[in-house]
Image (tube, rainbow, N blue to C red; front, side, top):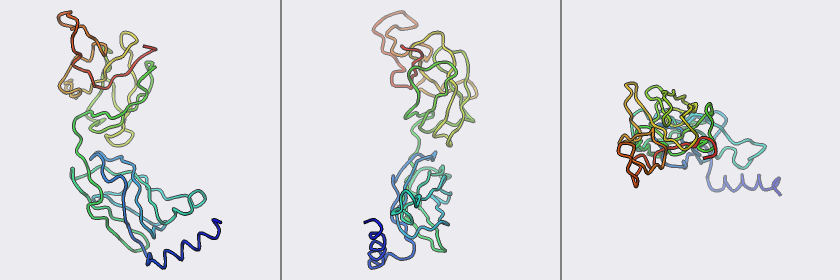
Length: 234
């Protein structure tokens, strides 16, 4: 059935006037200014020589469908990763070039400003962590050249390693004083805590109800909601 449907599909496209190259859509339509958002561009007439820019910057990790696995997508789909924005937030043109033709999805992708330094949307692993494990964090505003992290009461500034711009980074879990759940804080080169913001005492175990200054119980943890990782089986 598939063998006969391909020529029929080609005839249908030709009858609809879908000739040449045309860029129609990009999904998703927004992502962080840091880049590193996986996108899918739809249209037709995409050849092996296709190139894409977003806001004038080349699409990263551009890949095309595998003819053996997705024959019906060949020529109609482009995959890639958004580059970091070089001129801040806002709508940017998506420009596709192939076979000597160029088409533009005007204001097709919107770059969203990162809401805070060290903004972590997800991390892995966050449970059953042991010292020396590699922790991956995804989000924005995590510039590995500008910030380090500290975990709980571990007395060390741990460097970040960039995996994709400032949107995906890793660090090696240090050793706190005991197993349990500890907060992760971002610090600048001067040793100032920049995340969580406002600054809170990350050296206290996460979820503590005892005020470290007064010893009073019923205390509301000021770091609640910040990234925390659990060592051991706690």
